[in-house]
Structure formats: structure tokens, C-alpha cells
Length: 477
Image 1: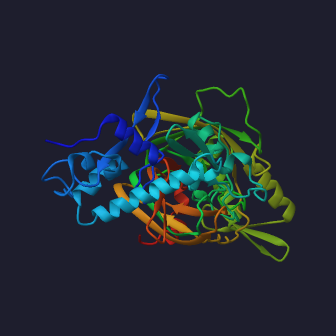
Image 2: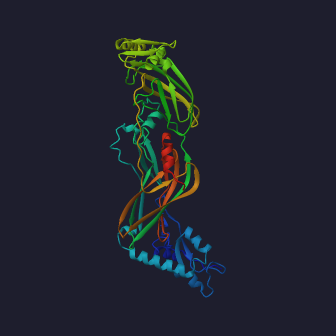
Image 3: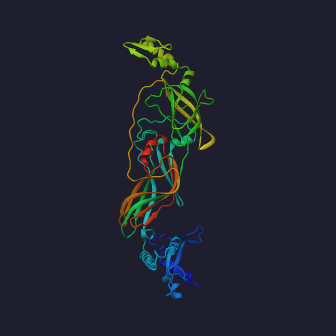
């Protein structure tokens, strides 16, 4: 026969603990509303300190049936902790459970009738995402990566918002982006997501946080395709269109079809297919330099003549240019200018603008042809070259895998919180490439007590051209 608790005794045990789990390392609420406004949910258990029947955990033969079924022999726990204490009776002895019970009831008694933050929770934690200052970035708002946060029921969603990527997905039109002298050495103002932790100690004693544990449920690569056109800022890619793959999947069966107009022009609105020029590109892995001189040639530019003049030299006041048969011809400055203008034809500003579309396939959309409209100037003459600077680093860092399930990352921190004190700190999460992650963040103090966030779903964008910086940023976990 089992000396079980009656319903009224169970209610007494629960109420005396304030309907919180009595385990000091847990203390989760065990009761709350259901969706049905007439019902409540209960996750608590009135657990026996000494077992209700022989053979049970911590059974005491000296107890009478009345003592075994009395409220004094019960401790209020959540279902997880109730199972835990019965699976390890050596660790969770009668003395330990009695102390849990006494401390929980004393805490509940102290909170009765008091409207304080601690009556809700003895520790508050919030996780959001921090965006860096972009006021100094002068290369267009649609090239700034901003992380947005959306709070759903029991879920925090963090997504990367990049205007250029949204435009690319819509089919353009896209234009050239600047890589040279960029502080990020790519056309985007971007960084790894920085998780922003805000904490508040509502306890009556100091708290010393020592660690953040990330429990990553799943990580997977993001194969969203993204290509850019590199702006010829320093005018050194004469006759070439440079395409760069900023996504993390190879693009195949590319076809660049376009009209070619003299001079640098804005995107016309009345350009229709078919396009008179078309250049196939079998694959775009990292970058490709597309020769468009044949299109200029078809538009009347004497490419061969320009090449010969470009390889000439001045001999005092006379310009000496090689000829097609291997000999040389000499001309005055006026004759050189006249010849140069003749070879350029209607492209007398030494630049033409390509207006058209780029089609391709990718692993992200197998069997589907993607098309994006574009506009890009291409020069006919080379001029300058310049170098590149290097980016900064940060304090609290972690790194997630691109692909994996059920793994952890630990970040050692050091923050002390006096009673009633709040604090704030950030953790930058690096990834090797664009990827999607679902995880929880757990804060741990020096005593081993833990506080866990709701699930967090985070999308990370990493430009492919920044592979070297990513490799430098991510150290072995």
C-alpha cells in the first residue's frame, strides 16, 4: 500500500513553495494559464522526501502512514527535478531535500505581499542583436548589412538585411560596386552578428557570471546565390567586365546579354530584348574577368588599332607606334589624337555602358534559371592602381560551425552584479560562410547556477570575397 498525498495536501505543498520548483538550481514556475481561459497548466510534482511505499527512494520504516502522507514530507518540484531526485538518492538525500523545502518556503514567505522585481524572477536576461555605427559609410545604404530582430512566442529571430541582396533576388537592376579602398575590402559594410546580452540581478546577494554556453541545435550553410560587378574605380580593367561571386554556391551556365552604349549613362528604362551582344561563361566560382572587346569591335571600335597605339612610345616630339606587320610608324601629337579618335569611333569618351541581363543556374535553385538585370560601364583605356587597408577586432568572440547539430560553444566571461545592478555585454559570433543557426544561450555563475534564453534563430551573411578575413577570425573551438 502506498501512502500518497491527498489533493489538498498537494495544493498545500505547492502553495507553500510559491508554485516554484524548490531545487535552488532550477526555481522554474510550475503553473500558468492554458489557451483555454477556464483552465490552467501544472508542471509541478509534490514529491515525497521519504518514499510513500517500501522499496521507494529514501523510504523510512520509522514513519507512520500519516507522517508519510503529510505536507511536511513533501517537496514541490518541477517534473524534471522530481525524476532527478529519485534517480540519484545518494546525491539527493533526505537532508538535502529538507533544506530545499525549508529554503523554498522561506523565500516564498519573504515574497508574499511584496511587489518587487524578485517576485517575478531573481534574475533577468535579455538577448538581442547589436548593429554597429554606419554613419561613416558612404557607399550606399543598400550595401549596409543590418541585423534585424523579431520576437515570436518562445523564439527570437535574427536575420541579416542587405538591400543589395534583396534587389538581386528581385532581379535587379544591379550596378557596379566599389571594392578598392573599402574598409571591409568588399563592397558591403558588414560584420559578424553581435549578440547583445542585458542582465539584471534581482537577488539579495551578489552574482558573479563566469561563462556563456551556446547550445547549438543545428547549423547549415546558406546557398543563396549572389554575384556582384566590380566597379573599375581605378580604370585598370580596360575591355573587361569583372564578376565576383559573393554567395557560397558556384554559379553555372552564365550568359551575359546586353546593349552597348557610348559613354557613362544611367540605366535606361526602355531597353528591350533581344540584346545584340551575348557572352557565355561556363562557371563563376570566385571571380571571372569577362572580355567584352568583341562587343566594342562590333559597335565600330578599332580594338586592334587602339592596342597598337597603347603600346607606342614618345621619341622626343614624335610618337612611335608599332604596326600590324611588325614595323613602326611615326606621327605628331595631332596625328596621334586624330588616329585615336578614329579608332574609338562613337565611343570618344573612352568608355561604354553595358545594359542588359545576366542569367545563371545555381545549386540553390537546381533546374531554375535565375536572371538579374544590370548596368555597368567598361573603359577602353587603363590608367591607375591602388592598394587596400585592414579591418579591426573585438573583445568577446565565439565561432559557430557552418554545418552541424547538437554541439556547444563556451565563452569565458567575468561580470559581477550587486543586488539590483544591471549590466550589458556583447558576443560577436563568427562563421566561415553564410549560414543559418538555431541555438540557446545560457549564462552560468561561479556557483554553477544557470539561466537560459528562449530559442534563437539567426541568419548570418558572409561575403565570399572575405574568405581570408573569416579564416583569420575563426580559431579552433
